Amino acid sequence: MHTTALVLFSGGQDSTTCLAQALSRYQRVETVGFDYGQRHSVELQARLVVLQQLRAQFPQWAGKLGEDHVLDLAVLGQVSETSLTRDTAFKMESSGLPNTFVPGRNLLFLTLAAALAYRRDLQVLVTGVCETDFSGYPDCRDDTIKAMQLALSLGMDKRFLIDTPLMWIDKAATWSMAEALGGPALVELVIEHTHTCYLGDRTHRQDWGYGCGACPACELRSRGYAAYAAGLPAR
Ligand code: ZN
Image 1 (cartoon, rainbow, N blue to C red):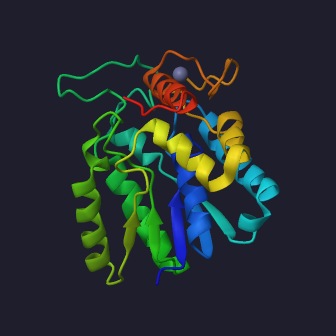
Image 2 (cartoon, helix red, strand yellow):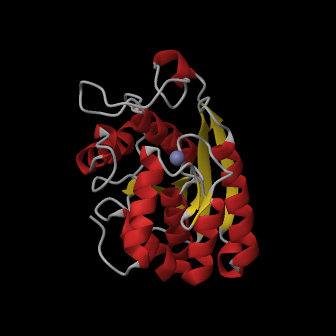
Image 3 (tube, protein in one colour):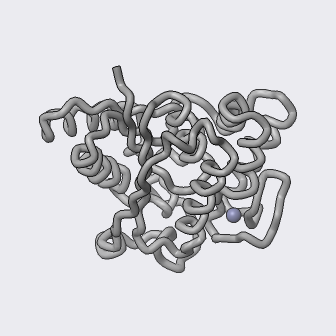
């Protein structure tokens, strides 16, 4: 029986929904975020606001929500040059992956999260990776996650479970999941306080939240919200 979890929490829509699910499923939940010199600290600020709002608006979860950890991963900027950490334009690379791809980033996140979970005696790692409608990052695929679960469990001699609630659902279903978990109040919280936009735009308020409305992350969030709002499955 798994009762404790560490949620990889970025302050975005996906990880916020995963956090809500973990809070409804496990008895003790902690969060971890990574500071790797993102171009905008908007994400890191959003995390704190979302945690505060969850505590304030959902008393049934507040008691389960434990410590928040932020790990410094500035080293990522030394090993990779991408549009997430540098001021370069977004484009698709010849590999077919967007230039937001940091090779192995998610492997590193999971490894550090597991080390932290080991120390904090937490059984489950929860991550919002999704094979269905994101940019095809290979380290977010189900097979990679399964392999990591095995490698981490063997390498740390502790049985970890990696829980990926969003792996096979699309963005419209992610909105529906938030509604099922926390009702309209959680959907509102996700709209108002989570951050997705690659450009760090918090000035333009769309019906699905703040963002430029044009970058790939905004487009995905906007399309998913439109499909959710229309009550139709997203494509
Ligand atoms: Zn945007």
